[in-house]
Every structure is written in C-alpha cells, then in structure tokens.
Amino acid sequence: MKLSLAMIVRNEEKNLGRCLDSIKDYVDEIVIVDTGSIDKTKEIGRGYGAKIYDFEWRDDFSMARNYCIEKTTGDFVLMLDADFVVRRFSRDVLKPLENKKLVGLAVINNSFILNGAKTVRRSLLGVLFPREARYVYPIHERISPDYGRVRLPIVIDHDGYQAREKSKFERNIRILEKELAREKDTFLTYKLAQEYKGLNRHDRADRLFSEAYRMSDPAKPFHPNLVVDYLNNLIATKKFDVGLELIKREEPNLPDFPDFHFACGEFYLNLVISNPKAFIQYLDNIRKSYEKCVQIGENSRYQGVEGMGTFLPLHNLGVFYEVVGKFENAKVCYKAAAGMGYGPSKERYAILCKPE
Image (cartoon, rainbow, N blue to C red; front, side, top):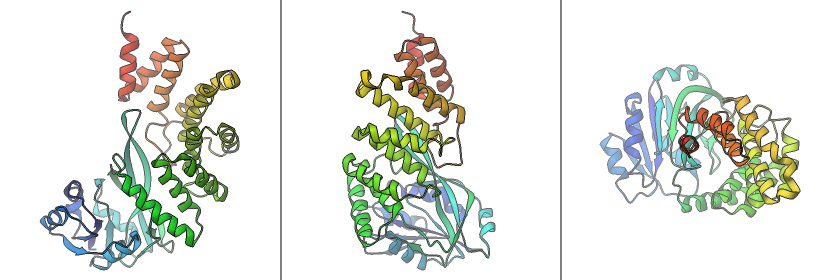
C-alpha cells in the first residue's frame, strides 16, 4: 500500500524540516501545497524530494487540503501540519484501514505554557485516510462524517500554540464568523469563543460560550472541554453566579474528568478572593476540588491537559496549604509534584525547606 504525506504550508521555514525529518522514512511521497510563502519553505521542501504546488489562499482550509489530496498518488494520505513532529508511527497503522471507509485518529500533544512551565493538552485528530476521502468545513476542517473513526497508535507533538500570532486568531475569527452567518453550528460557535478568549476578549467570548453551551449535546466528545473553557472564561469575566450554577449542573455529569475539577478549584479560589467575607464558606471547596483531581488521576478517556490528575493539582494544593499556614502539608504536596518533574513545585519545596 502506497502512503502519501500531504501538507498545506505558508512561511514554515522554521518548522518544515523538523516535521519532514520525523516522518520521511515512513512515506512513499511528499506532496506540499504552498499558499503564499515568501521565505524558504518551498526550497526546504524540495530538498526532501517533495512535489510542490502553489494554491491561492481563499480562507478555506478544506479547499486547500482537498487540492493537496488531489495531487497525491498513494492509496492512503497522511495529512500533517508543518508544526507537527511525529513521535510514534509505523506502517502497520495502515492495516486497520484497508478496504474500510475509516479515518485514523492520532493523539496530538499540544504544548503550551501554564504557570511558567511547559504543559501539554491532549487531543485527537483525523490524520490518516483513504485517498478518495475529502475534507468539509472551511475551518476546523475534518474528513466527511461519511467516514468512521478509529484511534490508531500514532502520537504527534504540536507546539504551534506556544507563540501564536494575533493575525492567526483574527484570520480564524473571520472565517468562523462567515461560516456561522451561513449556518449555526455548536462546535464552530465553541471554537469562535475560544478564538476570542485567546485574544483576551472575554466578554465577547462569554456570549459565544453561553450560546454554544445552550446548544451543546452532552454526548458530544467536545462537551466536557466546552464546560471547562466556559468555566475558565466565567472566572475572567467574574460572572461567579453563572459559574456556581454551571458547576452545580455539570458536577454529576463529569465525576471523572480531572480538568473539570481543577477548573472548579480555580473558580472557588477566585470566588473567595473576590469577596472573602461573602464567600468564605467556599474556601474548603478549593482543597476538595484539587484533591478530587488527584483521586481521579490521569484519565485518557478525555481530551485534557497532561498533569491535571497529578502534579498540577498537587502543586495547587501545596499553594493552598501554604496560604492557610499548613506548611508541612504544603511540603508533602510540593515534594510529590516535584518528584513528577514539575519545576514550580521544586522551587516552592526548596524555599519551604530552607532553614530560617
């Protein structure tokens, strides 16, 4: 079975070589569609023997990706972005797809900075499919739902969110608003809310999160993450009354999602800080929320942030105990999180252990 690597790129000279080095030995051809690079992107691609095609950008990711697929000659297509690095892959992943109308899902480790430390958010993305498959939707594009999904042992690192340019948020907002003006869609409304949140336009994001949440089906895979993102935005907008209702409504539905309980801990913390006299009764909810995260542990059932069931809540428990004057308890938590390699906990533990 012949496997084609397909990519759409623009000004990716810093990333392209790294991506191609991680996958070139597994594919039979490399097809790159360039949407307007003015750097050395195309030159780098040619150095790997890639077939390069130009495509005029039309604010439609599916259109560009489908054009790229048409230029491939393989039985299967592996669609990657230039800021991906493939960490786990083998040709054996093709076997479950042979003679079946399926899309192979990969685990994407999206790295970003949280509390000054590198953190990873896990997600699933359809990257491998038969050549006859095509993308739909101009943004947050995906292979047609006519194709089933199957999770494959493919792992990809993605660091494109670490220093995302403002222009990319604005581009995505433009495309999303155009698409939503044409047809209402819960998922795209949620994604538009995320884009505004990324620009710190929390009030605009709040209206969109609220709308997406009202339309959302709890059975959809993205619903738990929508709840968490909505709750975090409610912290930013200080809409604590809405947040309390959201927690009350969703707590029975998300008992094993550590990211949700971590967000609850952050919410209660900000609630108490906003007015200690009025909300002091919620103080112990901070501790209970983080302890719930540790009790659950890491849960691969959800697309969540790495460490939400281990070192992140342990660190925040350390902070909680330190603030309320229980320094020995804080040391225990910091030491446990530090033992998992979490840098901020190592620093706090060292400070607490210094002789006075």
